Image 1 (cartoon, protein in one colour):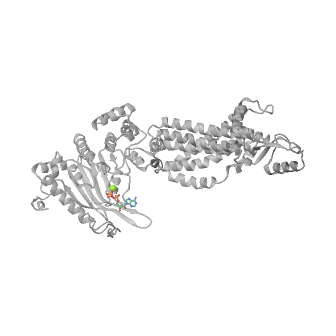
Image 2 (cartoon, each protein chain N blue to C red; image 1 turned 180 degrees about the horizontal axis):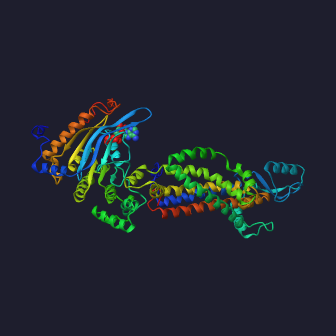
Length: 303
Length: 320
Ligand SMILES: Nc1ncnc2c1ncn2[C@@H]1O[C@H](COP(=O)(O)OP(=O)(O)OP(=O)(O)O)[C@@H](O)[C@H]1O
Ligand SMILES: [Mg+2]
């Protein structure tokens, strides 16, 4: 990779990008994570999943969280959602500490979690209905959301009749219909094929542009993180700690052809450096994969 | 569809193959029964006397061992007496299919032998009522308790160990007790069915409830769903198709307790009919009555299955 030498630093930002970050930081802080720690206690041992995590997210920011497998990304986002309680530290949403799950934080999971017994429309209405919106009101709003994600034709279909990508779109609509302050997404496109995934990414950016929502998005796909994020929070494992909070220097609006731009490549190089250096330590308690003896015939070589 | 595909693990069968195989699952045992009944070379350990000849203790329509018959024939031949005549026959407790079929018809059309004893359909109706009330009473308590146990761990720990213990106690053992408390009529019978069903019901439904995908509950939580709403809007609708399937299986179990239950106190219902017919050695009628129980049981289950398909259109686990 001799191109790498000529790449500018990922810290360099164009005028336009710097102005955008200034604009972002002039908005209020919506989510504040203060010295957050989480220790899992099982019979045999304690796992420190997260240790002293600090960061802030501004309103309408798109924050991605990346890190090697097992570094505590899911644990972090589940604490933000209120599905898990931290062992130390604090999460503040608009200045108020988070206690348990609530409608102010929507979540989209990696697995498909649409309610199979409800039609697409009723799924989107669910949050509104449990929060005491009238049936008619909920229905009108749900149809608007379905229109936004382009699935109004499937309003009366059941989830099992949808493809994976469609299911995740409905899950996004279901979360957004509640008008949360913040949308938490844990590898939402992880189970989708490459093409659907690319389309979903563009679609998500489109939605994010149009409505007042802050997104915290977990992924292990570095391209996805750079393509989507304003800033990328890089975690390192054992214990899960913040390694760096990177401001992505790629200008918006984002396009596919930016994948080969200098800003993109230099950011990716930095992410790889961070992640592979921490991954080199290997997972805790994990031994190197064993060397395998040769079972194929001598002379029958594939490489 | 090729033969190898048929024997793939969990092979998908075409609708035609499914109904064909289902048909044969009934035809094969009936065929076996026909062979045993109508082919004299198969089994037929007895001889049905048509003419006693010179054997004084033989009578027409009497069934004797083949060995006895051969012995008497040999003796008669040696002494030049008139030979007894007979045809190979099966024991009286194994009537032939056509006899049972005939009994099936006549038991509905012939008035009962003893005066003011009930007709078969009246006995049956009585049995169905006992089953119905037993199952309904058990379900009224068992289903909600099972759902609560499967949802809330403290309730589960407070209830299930005892239920687990109690379900090993044979329900009929409570028969005498039930008579002492509830009298000799339908009360104790229903009680035995309730005892036999309830404890299994709680455990099975608790397990079904626990199998609900936790991610659905978490998704509902992040949408702002609170305590009781979680139960009514997520847990119950989420388990409903499985709960329905459990109830169908449990109803089948309730039927298996029927006969014991009906022997308690004054014998009634289909059990009374069966014991009565067996006493007169009308075994064809006994078989007919037993088969009717099977037909009613299978019939309700098929109907409930079809109903389930309409009730739960999202349920993918039932075959279309
Ligand atoms: N319920 C739990 N009990 C015990 N340990 C847990 C529990 N949940 C997570 N952990 C541990 O915490 C650490 C972080 O897990 P987490 O699922 O948050 O990682 P992750 O970054 O989301 O991984 P991946 O990229 O594979 O999804 C892991 O070492 C895991 O074993
Ligand atoms: Mg994870």
